[in-house]
Length: 96
Image (cartoon, rainbow, N blue to C red; front, side):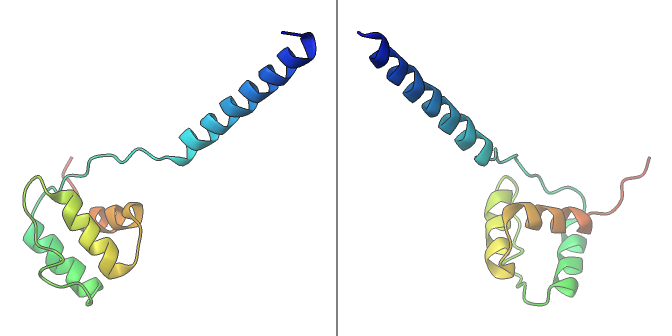
C-alpha cells in the first residue's frame, strides 16, 4: 500500500473508534431494580401522588420489577430513571 492509502485507512479507523466510543456513552446500562419494604404502603402512597396509576399498573410480583416499571413509565409518560426515582422516594426511610 502506498503512503497516501495508509493515511486514509488510519483516518477511517480513527473515525470508527470515535463513533464506537460515542455510541457506548449513549447506551446506558440498565441496572436491576428491586422493590424493598412494604409494597402495599408504597403503592398506596404512589396512587395518592399519581391518581392516574391503577391497581393493575402497580401490581407487584417478585422478580418482575421491570414489568412494573414499564407499566408505570407508560402510565406516567416518564422514562425508566424517572420512574425508579419516583418509586424509591415512596420507600420508607431505613433506620440506621
